[in-house]
Length: 194
Image 1 (spheres, rainbow, N blue to C red):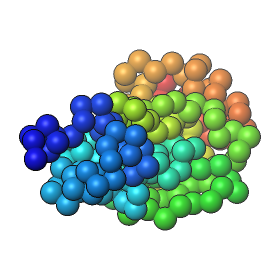
Image 2: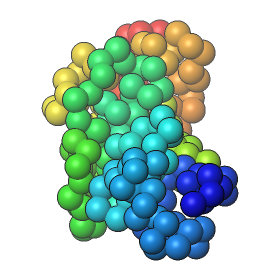
Image 3: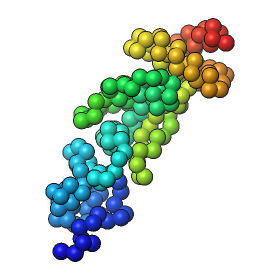
């Protein structure tokens, strides 16, 4: 067998579903790549090239929950607004949505569908996939809104860091208008800090 047959196709994405890989190689060749370790399973039906060094957990979450959005501690950590590294990944899905089973340690959060897309952005994971993430402003609002989960200290610390980096309180308060119960406590905290 030639060496060209032993190499992965260059146009094969970094991460992919089994069915997607069949667009690039035959099933027999794909199984050979899996058996020799050139392709590694991330979860059932989801694979990656063995030399890919990305975040496997996020790839799995994005594949199983396309509307999934990094939120709360996970989003605050990605925006460098807190120091902890969460042991579980906080992922928001619209209330009423099914929370899939994952190998990744996920804490599914069910957010109101009417406000779900406010402050939602995309975070690239691979050359072909991304996952939702809430903006720094939305993450701070959620930290205040759900401070009974992770504590008011975390929300206050995130807000302080955001302000030190030049965050504009007017932008934060404008977004917070969509979350009326949080607006008052956020405004009061800003008055104390400023």
